[in-house]
Image 1 (cartoon, one colour):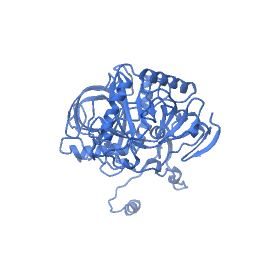
Image 2 (image 1 turned 180 degrees about the horizontal axis):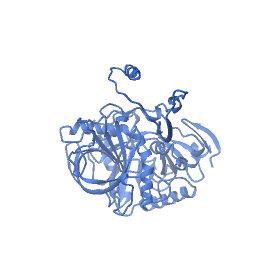
Image 3 (image 1 turned 90 degrees about the horizontal axis):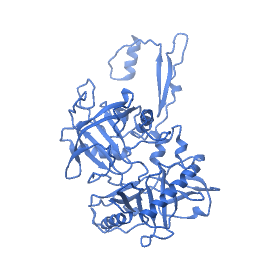
Image 4 (image 1 turned 180 degrees about the vertical axis):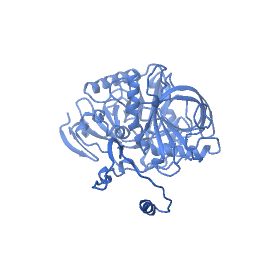
Length: 508
């Protein structure tokens, strides 16, 4: 158990001194249980590649060969890079062909603008701060032994009541001696939570159950400082293995010289969506997905009783007004798996999807707004001469957050005149103006001042009756009120200034 109090900035936790004295590169031990440690992986930059193989061992060998070429100078700067440890293998217990991802950390001096791989199958990754369950593993990357150890570790965690994504999720093998896998320096790890999921669940009623047990009695704060990181996450090749489920939408694609695909989709079917009452992209899924989840659960389309972040998911972001700022856009969270015909979902949460053509740019990372909007701006500039709807983007995240390396995200810009849609593009305003998408991000919602509605309350007097209102709901930094039984007198005044207009209007 965690018994001894200690401080590891920016965390303050309890720990046993004995096991938490273990030091690992890019990791900090936070707490030690009898069968595993809980550790924080620092935000860092890695190079990765993924292969598909029947064997974990042969897949590991093939992938390491690809990474060796990058490290030996097969990159945009022809730079030879020293091999850093740990070597990490990312995989899961397969049903047939196995997905094997191998990753090396890059030296810190290369985190700001690292060399871009020339092989499109080799990619750069930025890993956000992540908390992992870790324990020693005396074996190497042999599939049967590793899978058996992973299954045992998943069971240990569930028996202890620790939250995990699922029992058939990704697991990781960390090797700290590249010449000898069977050493005490080899460990097996399972994902617990990262900064993305923490922000997603924070504020929800079930937030605490997503945290490792020892964190539930402590305020979880993430680091805000560290080395400068500037990494090009745009993929040179979208590939074809990012979505392997039989329900994945089918499409045909033509790829241009920089990897942008022109995709044509057939009829995908009905999908579930929900508009999010927010001005912040980071909050859209947080606010909309619980309602999407309830609709799916009511139709028996989800497993388990408690809400968890859905995957794969998409986000429609539409420019509804010409002015700048986050509130000039609307956000709609979508669940990308088509609904069965018999599913009964509220009409305002279902839409037909398909029969369209889109320009698509793929990128890595964890799908945050900074990366997604930067890729969207780059895609817009690249395809501006083509017939596109310039007032909306669709941002797709295919992977669960527990997949750390070689993640797949996309930004779409649609071509106009989609059959059966109410408008050629997404702005349905009566104003005949094409609102080009504004890729400037608003201020981080966590840093925005919170609204105190008491400062806007009407002060009722004998001669001045305040309108009655009812609080409907709270979200982000906003309060929504419904006005009850109120009558208003209105006038319109043209003026160059707000104060002057108010004075003229009131004088009437």
